[in-house]
Amino acid sequence: MRQFLRIAYAANVLLFFGALEAMAVEEAQYTVLRKEADFEIRQYMPHVLAEIIVAADLEGAGNKAFRRLFGYISGDNRTRSKVAMTAPVAQQSVGEKIDMTAPVGQQRAGSGWAVSFMMPASYTMEALPEPDDPDVVLRQVPARRMAAVRYSGFWSEKSYHRHRTALESWIEAQGLVATGEPVWARYNAPFTPWFLRRNEILIPIDGGR
Image 1: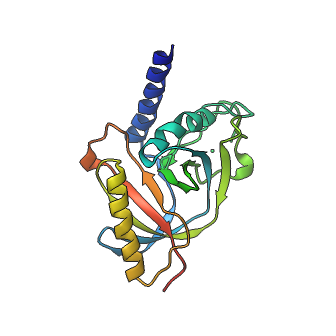
Image 2: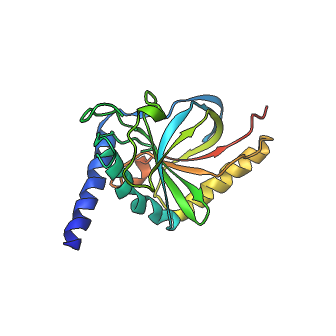
C-alpha cells in the first residue's frame, strides 16, 4: 500500500509539472525597473499565496510540502472546489477550474521552509476556498520591490547558495538594502533538462535609488 501511495504521489507531481511545461501559464506580475546581466530589480504586484511551513532541508522541503498544497487546490477545501496550480506553483463555484500561474516559491521560515503556490491575479483572499488542512494558509502579499537573479541548472543547495551570494553582493554594490528572506522560485518540471530550467532567487529590497 505504501509503495502504491508513493507511486501515486510521484505521478501527481509529474502530471502537475508536465502541465506547467505544456501550457502557457500566467506568471507573477511585475515590471522590470533595472537590468544588468542576469540581475534585475522588479516591482511586483500584490498577490495571494497558498503556503505551508515544513521541517526539512532545502532540497527536500518542496517534495514534503507538495502533497498537501496539491491536495488544497485539488479539492481539500471547504467548498470542494478545484483550484488550478501555479508556477511559482487560489475560488469559484464547485468544479470551475482556475488558470495556472508560475512559479513555485520557497523561503526560510525559522527552522523550516515556507513553500508556496501563487494564486492567479484575478482572485482575492475572499474568493478563495478555505483549506481543510490547518497548516495550509492563504497569505496576502503586498506590492513589493525585489532584486532577482535568474539561472539554469539543477535544484541543488550548492547552486542555490552560490547564486544567492552573487545576488546579495550585487544588491550591496547597487547601494540597496535587503528587507526580507530570499525566495527560491522554480518554473519547470523535474524531468526538464538542467540546462533548460528556469530558476530564480528573489530578495525583497528597499526603494533605493
